[in-house]
View 1 (cartoon, rainbow, N blue to C red):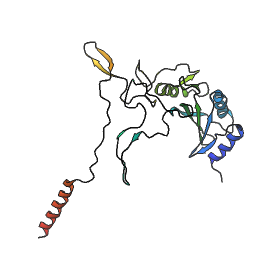
View 2 (cartoon, helix red, strand yellow):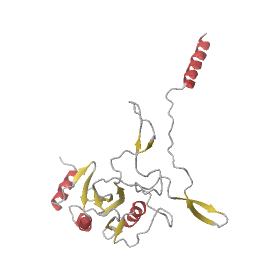
View 3 (cartoon, rainbow, N blue to C red):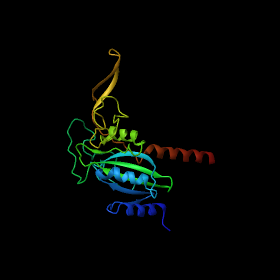
View 4 (cartoon, rainbow, N blue to C red):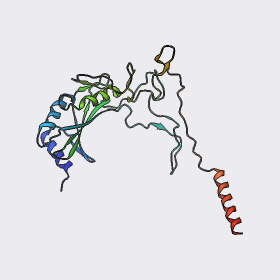
Length: 244
């Protein structure tokens, strides 16, 4: 007996026979769609009775700039663990204002991902849309189809810099006024671009260049500690005294 996800997968393949990305992925149906076709496909997913995806539950951005690369490089490894935080293996994460060059990944860098829910069919769909231009990532806004997309798209714009064409109020949502950059991009420095403090003389918050020194903290893991051995010996001695 086929599952609800498998049945919906077959239904979507019938509705969109040219789309070969439709598949069951764990507990939902995943599909990719071109930016030019997003509105038409989304409208069908909402209005077709066999789909009835009346609810949009989330929209998020994805940055594939360093996809497949290890975040940290390590020196040694054993059967129990890896050495920790030796150095950053990702480009530009611990530096700022360096103009880091990102690797060529052979695919669009930015993707907008919408998650839809069909209450009638009790099944979910993940709808992915790649932004054609990495320098100016633009995809159509889904606010005309699902009004709940408004805040989700603002969040994606704020954190990833993805522009949603047709959005009526595309402003930053989580970062401060005048914030520089988009903090969820892979080339955004972990230490930020500026730091802020309250100036009692000016009676306002001021922004200044980052003063901390970029560094990697290496936790020291002590696998053998004589103090524990000494404690065990003391406990054994105490037990022996009690027995005697």
